Length: 341
Image (cartoon, rainbow, N blue to C red; front, top):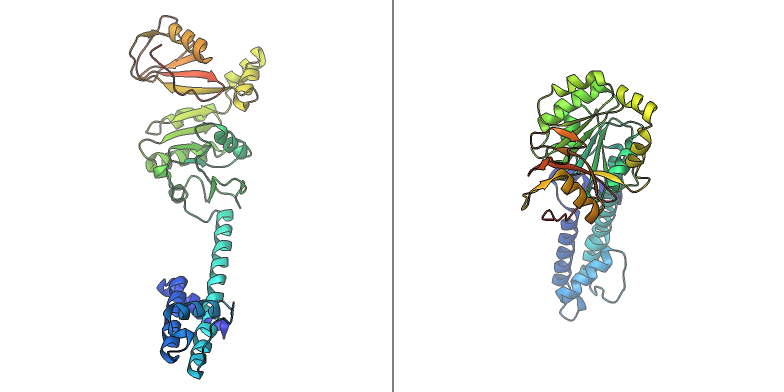
């Protein structure tokens, strides 16, 4: 009979959306009022507070025995409501709660969920380097507390031990998967599917679904695909995994050694990008370069003009304008720079 009650209550919840807590409270109130009505004035259950206390301890099978009905009618109420129905509702509630927790955990592991947050970082696609990529994102001071949403066609969550990494299962290049990752409210999207074809499809859909302020970074495997990627409308950054030029230079000048140190954080040094604000004084590149090094121990090496042009190793007399970007090497994200000098 208890099993039947549990099934009826759960079916009622699914069909009508009635909360088990509300059902339980109503049961307590009804049983309290009924026992008050049938018990004589000298009974302890003639008081609503006592009757409610009795209903709670009886329905939860605690049964202190400090208060109890003294009439046959009161005992019938006790058997029918708090004892029989109360135990059934309590059991149904516990079962429902436990199954909800287990179902939520399973859906999190299998990625059968939708992300509803905002200001997050979406990683589209998965390769053997995905876990390392996410770990590096979280190591950055500006991203350590931000949710990372991984949208990839994997069997289960690859990093379940990390609380702020959410897994969305599905083909990374499809709109439905990206929408479940709530890409419209993301602050940044990183696309690295391991296939230029899949990455291209993902990029097209990302550019259609993302918000205006969302930054998009695309990892390209082959230099031959660069022209195709750049034909996609919108503003985004393309990073080539390894170009032939880089390979040749790495062979001749071993440029990969310091780059590897920077990219792996082995020496706690990173490359950061800072936008120049409204300036109260005029700077030349060398003046600013020297000032940042002497005061903050930041090493600048490249500029981006307000037109988007990137200048590596700028001339000493190049004038710094507002909205210029500057690349720095530092041991932590540069904040609080005093641009007045």
